[in-house]
Image (cartoon, rainbow, N blue to C red; front, top):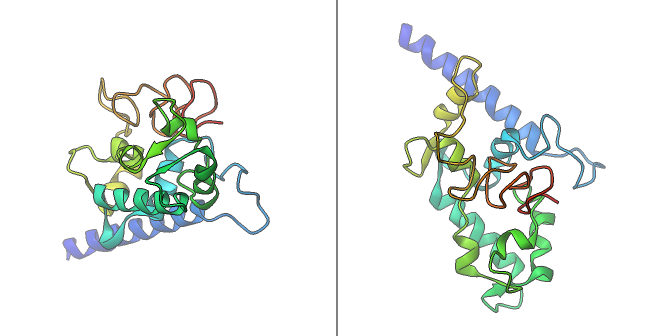
Length: 197
């Protein structure tokens, strides 16, 4: 009987988290694509979680493989000329089509400054979602773990020391830390480059 009550509470919590995630992810008609998101918008934790269903979550689990497949789809959409690399002009389609990359800039991916990003370079960028929620470093995050991370009694999901907040080894920034150093990061509010505009 007690196990049934716990299961029911878990299912209810998952439904609540899932509906809140979907509500944040989908933008009402008439709202411009670059308008701030309700409940966060500045590239913070809400954006990391709110966009996660865009690329993963099949079967109640988010995996690194799902993330790589999503990056592959985005790259194929941008590489219309099938050259094996994209330039700044090709890249423009990605932020328009993907809520995950709504604040992304080409320079964020073109770290070498050569004016193009190869498929391999693009696919090598890790997800800030895993930096924040994959505490076991298993490349698998279950819905139940997300639900626990979002409850008020749960400990804050800040990174462990020396991990950065998002993309490992790249310093701080918005969207879970991330590449781009300083205050820019992955969707964060300006300065330091990265996904911030």
